[in-house]
Image 1 (spheres, rainbow, N blue to C red):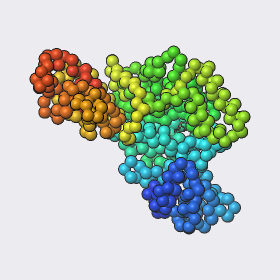
Image 2 (image 1 turned 90 degrees about the vertical axis):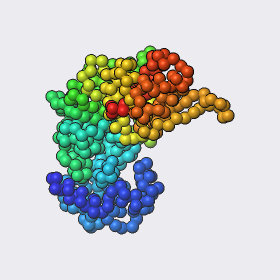
Image 3 (image 1 turned 180 degrees about the horizontal axis):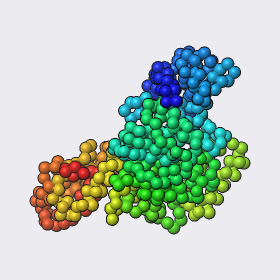
Length: 493
Ligand SMILES: C[S@@+](CC[C@H](N)C(=O)[O-])C[C@H]1O[C@@H](n2cnc3c(N)ncnc32)[C@H](O)[C@@H]1O
């Protein structure tokens, strides 16, 4: 079986069925249209014969191709026997979507999913039933981007679907376990890994942590079925537990499945409930012994949320009365639960074993620079560093300004002094923070040469301030600048 996948992979590569090859054949507009699930421009671009055009028509555009043309590009008998293609009269049609996917280092990978839903939700596959297996969507690439990519011995991808997270994990984890409630998904994940030249993963069927109940991992990732819906309908998104219970269970149970120092990273949705602070809600999910960083990226009111997922399932193309009934069902469910809105975001846990864990919960809806895995790792390293430093220790340490931090002065044109000064990161989270004259001066001097205390003494002298007072009141601001990644300890946190 692995040799058969190798032969299929070789055939795909020989035809240049890669992200670059597609771009060249289709041209940028048709390529981009395909990513929006629009197939007409790509159909026009593949009218001429050729091995690549045959594969694009077969696997991406779901058009049957003449048997002899399929035989010229594929190990046809094996692909037929394995069920990846099927006979359709004297033509051959694909039974799955196989889509080139460029890895982070330019690798030529392939993602296998159900036909018609490789990009942008299942709307194209509506009516396919609850077990539809999705390809790569925005959520998949977001999670892949924020995942910490430190080399590890073991990784778990929970709810693997097409296998995309397992494929990424296979690049830096010695052993990868991938689970899914849906056995069809595991069949697809196996082919995704094999076609992409990744080692086989340990594939297990089952719900949440059940299939790995006695094991622990260095890295756990999950893009779970996080949608808060009125009932289980589509396995890839409706978890079948009430409200945000599936995300809560995942996060709560992850602590016991992590090795010391290990990371668990999730995409999640959480309810904003009348009379309750959303931050307190998600804080209560964090398991004991784990540090956490929870970022709310977006909030949608219940109508926006219901419409998003109704469209995702293609319900807007259905009979208007059924659409209205379904819409009502979503709103009824939210009303019953006192839900006013839903938050979307990222949850990262790190098993620190700390008695007083660092739990940072924030709202950051602004653009970020993906991949963020290194920024996530560094966030926790900085928390470790700050945990060990009281104010005196902080003043004795040396700091450097993080790369690509710029200063912006904001105020009325022509005014002598700016109204405020902002430090802005051009990398990672792309944070911005207001600083006063001392903060700006301090950050500007931080090149690791002088200790923080010595810098403050010099600033006090320049500004005619009392150095003792300055040493007294500044550590809080320094702590914040370090916590948010504007300053880095010169010793290397
Ligand atoms: C949103 S898809 C994510 C697929 C893929 N990991 C990605 O990032 O694109 C969620 C996956 O979780 C699976 N799933 C649903 N309920 C589950 C459960 N209770 N336990 C484990 N997996 C589940 C679905 O079958 C689906 O493959």
